[in-house]
Length: 336
Image (cartoon, helix red, strand yellow):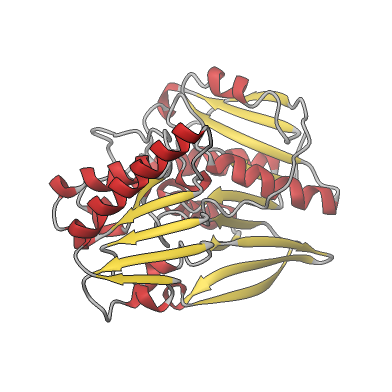
């Protein structure tokens, strides 16, 4: 089977990255309107457990590229392996996540396949002659919609959390094992170590996020914000500087280089509000900002703003959240 749409799955060796299911949702939506087939490429070493996870999914075929050479992620090796596989399956549309892996290999894939790359997309909509893709421009300050033709192969990377909300059909896809083609070019990168993502907490699914920025000052000051997120029944998120300094993992990063979130409540603590960060959270239903700087850009999009010391305000919020939870428990109700 040669599906017209091929999705490159992401995983950490034992778990699929949730963005893979976002891509499947996009692929399924396009396939239903164009009467196309959807395939997923899973590559790595000893991926049988991952294949079992996908036995019941909204795809028509799963290609398994299972080889010891793929055990450790190496962009040179992965690009060559994926490109040669895609030359055989000849898809018309290749979907990847706009993640570190997707960003790194999509350019190489497009070059090797002589395909057009459309990166960092928020949405893709099928048209009779091709697709409409929506992308952020000018640092996320604006959105552009581009029309592309479906005649040639197109490579599209989509942001995390951008999945269309729809119920997907359950299929029982065929699994086809593939072998890694012999290398023609030696890898120019040597992998000396790797920290695998956990995917333990998907902040795109949270109804409430407590997001921290550079304004918290130092890593030792993180616990109150974690406590606040727990007290409010939400999750912790962060701006890019927090992740770059290693205070929180990349799974928590919101923005153009992180994930796009749309929670019911987004509580921004010590976040200045750069365009790159705002692009990832501006569609939140309710935005509350706490910052000492009254001229911080985050106040321009916040529904409610508090100018003050976050280390005086956050403990008060924690106490009130806990008192509210106690009152709800005593009255037999639930906390919203």
